[in-house]
Amino acid sequence: MNEFHGRALSWTIKDGVVEVSLHRKPCNEIGSESLADFERLAAALPGLEQDAHSLILYSTLDCGFCAGADLRELFRRAQEISKTEAVTAIHGFLERIHHVMNTLDASPLTTIAAVNGVVFGGGFELALTCDLIIADKTARFCFPELRLGLIPGFGGIPRLKRDLGNAAVRDLLLTGRSFNSTKAQQVGLASQVVGEGEALRVARATAAQAGKFDRGTAGAAKRFAKPIPYDELQREIEIFCQLFTRPAVEAGLRKFVENTDAQPYLP
Amino acid sequence: MPTREKTLDDVLNLAATQFKVPRATLSPDDDFFKKLGIDSLQALSLLTRLEQHFNIELPDYEMQGVSDFKTLAERIQARL
Image (tube, rainbow over all chains, first blue to last red; front, side):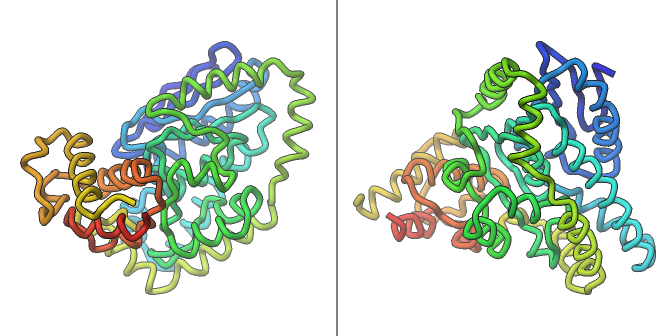
C-alpha cells in the first residue's frame, strides 16, 4: 500500500522516501484511533521498504510534532471500567504501541523525524524511534509523565538511555522540564537544528543523501549503531502498569483533564 | 550584561512581535496569558523565543506560576 490517508496520519512514497504526515488535531495526541493508523503503517512497512530507502515522519500541525498520549481518552476509559480491567487494557495498548515503535526502530529504512513545536511524551518517544531528528527552532522536547505519577510508557526511557548521556536522560525524566532545539542538539538528541518551517525540506535533502548508499550496507550500519533494547522496553511496560494502579495517577490524570488553567502543559 | 530595563523591554517587544499585538498596549505588570490571549503551548513557544534571543536556558519550572512580564524578565535577568 504505497499511499494511505487515515484520520491520524497519512503516507505517500516519493523519490524513494516514505513521507508520513501526522495530522490529528489538536496536536497529534496518540489514542486508540491514532494507534490503529500507526498499526496500519507498521503492517505496510515491509512492502514500503521494497520501494524506498528512507522514511520521514512529520506533522502538518503548527502546534507541533506530537503532544504524546491522548490523556483525556485514557482517563475517560479508565473511569468506565474497573481498575483491574483498566490495567489489562493499558497493558494491551502498550504492547500494541511498542510493536509499532519497535517496527519503526528496526526498519532498514533510514528514518528521520522532522519535528517542530511540541515534542512531548509519546511524541518524543515516537521521534526517538527514528535514526535522525531534525528539529526546527520552535521544537521543545519534554517528558512530563512524572507529574502524572507515571513514567514514559511508549519506550522512552530505554531509547533515551540508548541515545543520550546520563545527565540529559535524568534531567529530562526527573525534572520534567523541556529542552529547546539548541539544547537538544547540544545533548546529541537532534542531529540538525533548522529555521522555523524548514525541518521537512532539510529532512528531504537528508533522505536524498542517505539514499545514495547501498541499502544493505546502510541497514547493517544502522543495526550496529542502533541496537534495540527489547528487554528494557518490556520491563518499561511492566513498571508503567504497576505505577498505573497507584492513586496518585488517577489524581494526576484527573487534574490534567479537568484543569482549565492556561498552564496545564507546563511541567 | 543588559540592564533590567533593557531585558524587560526586549521581553515586551518579543511578545508583541510574536503574538502580533501593539507594543504600546503591553505593560510590565500585565498577565501575559490574559493580555496576549495565549494558552500554555503558546507560552512555551514564547519561552523558546526568549531562550533564543537571550541565548539562555530557562527551565520550565522556573516559569511555574509566572504570569507577568516583569517577573518573567527578572527570571531571565538572573540567567544572563
